[in-house]
Amino acid sequence: LLKERQNMLVTFPTRLEEVAKRYGERVLSCPSNTISFGMTLDSLARNQRDDETDKDYTKSVAKDISSFGAMLFTRCVSGTRVIPRAESKTIDKYVFEGFGSSVQNFPHAYMTAACAIGVSPAEVEEFFVRLDKTLAEFMTKRKQISEGNS
Image (cartoon, rainbow, N blue to C red):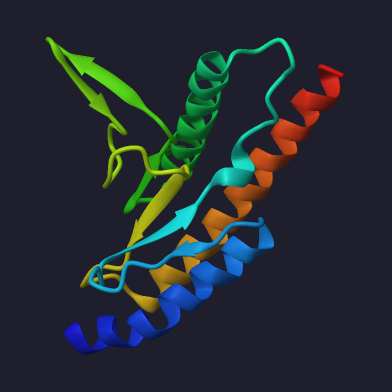
């Protein structure tokens, strides 16, 4: 199992980079993390409307980006986590800026994908097929919505 995973560690980031480039995204460099790989999701954000405050825009886009995570889940894509930019949560009297993110105020929405021990090459291939299809579907839906609002 360990040898199979080590072999996938060579191809997984390369495949993720291919998908990222197709959608104008990039793979995040985290050399000390050999299990989870990050990819920006900035292209999923719609343009800010002229009449929209920064706060309202950020909140709306966070909801859209979270819906991409839900789309992945409903398509049986496991091992991912989708993190909107500038998410803030208040629990009791404590405010958590960058909630869900690895760092506070990270400047990008992003997703992580795990390449864990026990995952097979066929499962990894299916992951990339489903990720690519879901990104394409999200972009198509967003374009249809923005054209409908024009």
